[in-house]
View 1 (cartoon, rainbow, N blue to C red):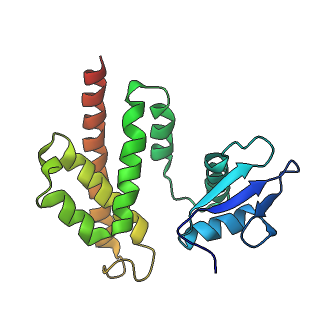
View 2: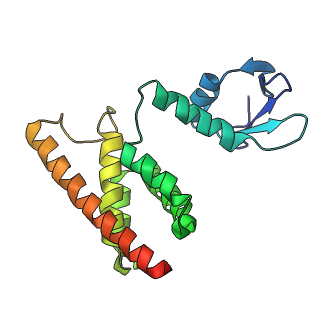
Length: 185
């Protein structure tokens, strides 16, 4: 049985073929995406140079899903990500995204409880906007998957409320970005 605590090591050969070292067979990007969906961590290493190519291949998997119409990332989020590479707030973005996805994994009820009760970060300026953004993101991510949310099937009223929530979050995010811009000047 494979040790699922250690990352699954995938080696990329000069022919660009990807080799699963646990099962001793070749794999595709779809196979790697499935390993990840099943909870496995993967590490992709270039056999010749020893370079870690994991980030490059994970980005490629995301790009392929997005190009096939499996749109998870809205245009405004993609635009903001591109902007984050060119402004001075770059160091905040990776930490924010990592924290957001960690909270997503912990579950909706745990996230709301952590952000509202007994958390010393809750009193920091901008945390309300960040919490609202994370809650909207979580709602969007879990709304379409059975068993991941206790909410009933959406109706028109719920969609209107969601749109209002998203508009409010966008406004708060814009205000936060303005504050960050002013802090960096």
